[in-house]
Image 1 (cartoon, rainbow, N blue to C red):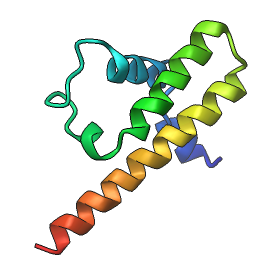
Image 2 (cartoon, helix red, strand yellow; image 1 turned 180 degrees about the horizontal axis):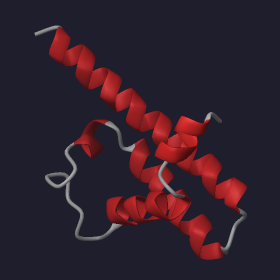
Image 3 (cartoon, one colour; image 1 turned 45 degrees about the vertical axis):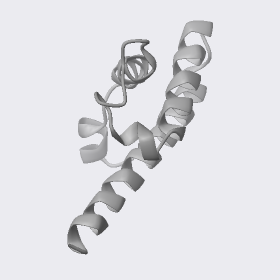
Image 4 (cartoon, rainbow, N blue to C red; image 1 turned 90 degrees about the vertical axis):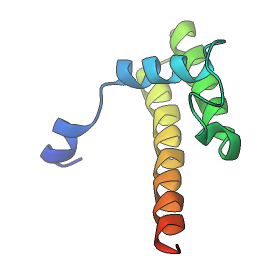
Amino acid sequence: MSELEWQTKPALRHWVRYAADLIHPKTTRSSYPVLDEWSELQDYARDLVKASEAGASTSTQWAIADQMNTVLQDIQIARHDKGASR
């Protein structure tokens, strides 16, 4: 990991908080419309919160956070492509 990536990469606790927000019972599709098309994001979020609560190793939690990040990047690419095709 480069020094720049290290400085800009969110801390694991931020990923866990974001994941908890995604699976919170009051979270709706209107809050996060992206969940309609990308439901696996909520699955990874649920897995990350469970791993954190269970005290799983940070490497395990980072692996799940990285999977969430991959989905978020896919969402960005899809949105960019959708906007470019208009």
